[in-house]
Image (cartoon, rainbow, N blue to C red; front, side, top):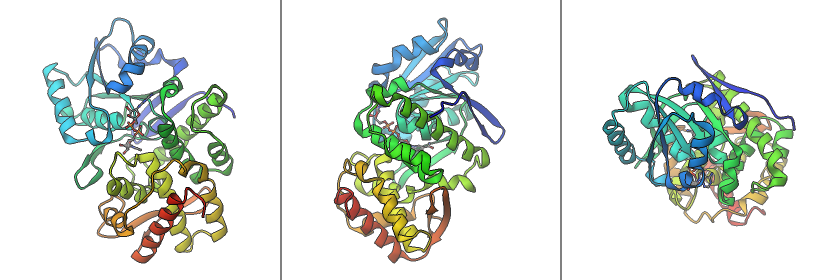
Length: 368
Ligand SMILES: NC(=O)c1ccc[n+]([C@@H]2O[C@H](COP(=O)([O-])OP(=O)(O)OC[C@H]3O[C@@H](n4cnc5c(N)ncnc54)[C@H](O)[C@@H]3O)[C@@H](O)[C@H]2O)c1
């Protein structure tokens, strides 16, 4: 489990580093000569780690302006963004200023969208504090908010100047949030290599001293994988789509179940099961591989709430998902570990079957 030294994300004409804790002094250089910085966070995260973050990462003479948004997916909205704009105008934030998004994916996406759109864009630094946001949402520049019609439907591509990652923040994360992050890491395993997948599925969803080295390794490798994919397709027109493996199902679950009951990473776990079945039913994946792959998720789906709605309730949100265009349903399907393809599935019947299969797997706590 070799730990990498440096990760540089190359997205179109942008290049930015992932700064791990031992290179924390670099952050001051990235902020440059500005005499203040704006941190957007939420009360949960900032009360746990905010003071130490400011003390350890930011230059002593920098003025820190703290803006707090409410905690939760349901606050990833235009209303929250408008509220942040108002506060930014009242402190006369200018184009040379920098916003640091300090929190999980909800803060990262909302603060990122605010930074992208306020006066056509101010500097952004992502400081993700959940496992999921470290390995996924902080890299690649997708920022955005939810709309009544679906998740993440309003947004932009806006690359940060740096991503700051300190696994010490994970020590206060609950089991639920660790499961969520592991779900995205396991997804990377299915998209990349069996070796990495096995490391991921053998990980307990807790950040204990005994697992620290393994979790650090998983974070770095998953970030590297995402950075590589983003480097090939910054604007999500081509290969980047594979990162959405399990996500068409996942977004539909979040929408149908409500964001409070099903968090993003939890929905991705369940969504991968739907995607395995659809891959099999569409002739891409053998039945034995499907069975083997779903068994890797057994220990994690035990934590999920039952999926109680009718299959059609999960189907309809798929048509407004960004992956479903012109009324067609598109899915990332798996052929084997490390080999995924984006396909339009014309048979609604197969999609409904996949939803039923996913429901049964989740509701039986993984044993089928
Ligand atoms: N932009 C992208 O590319 C992308 C990719 C994947 C997911 N997302 C988005 O990310 C969001 C989910 O992110 P998330 O899973 O980080 O959820 P989250 O931001 O809601 O965080 C989960 C909970 O953990 C708390 N928390 C955060 N850091 C903590 C810490 N260190 N210790 C204790 N508690 C902490 C938060 O306050 C929150 O209550 C969704 O909105 C999803 O759409 C975006």
